[in-house]
Image 1 (cartoon, rainbow, N blue to C red):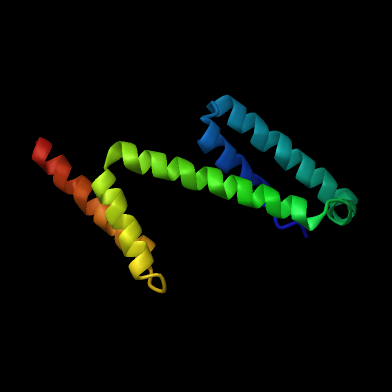
Image 2 (spheres, helix red, strand yellow):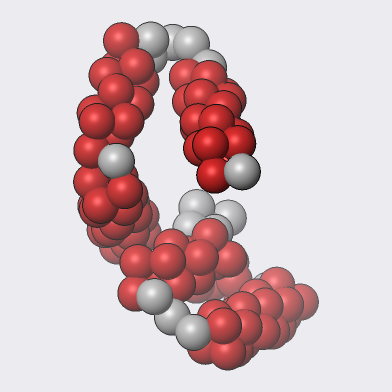
Length: 118
C-alpha cells in the first residue's frame, strides 16, 4: 500500500551516507522484521492511512535528489568528460534504452583500459 520501498530506501541511504556493512545489514534485518510484523498484523494499512502522501512523496524526492547528487559527484571525480557525454546521450535519446547503451559503453572502456595495463 505504501509507495516507499524500504529496502531501496536503505540502499539509497547506505550509498549516500557511506554506511558500513554492519549498519546496512542491521538496518535491513530491522526493517525486514518490522515489515513482516506490520504486514502480518495489518498495521501497515493503518499506518498507510495515518501518514500523509506528501510525507511519503517528500521522502522519495529527498532520497532521489541525494542519489542524483551522489551519482554526479562520482561521475565528476572519475571522468567528467564521460559523465557529460552520458548525460547528453540520456537527454538526446530520452525514449530509447540509453542505460543499456551506456553500460555497454562503460564495459567496453573498462575492457580497453584493462588490456592497456597488460
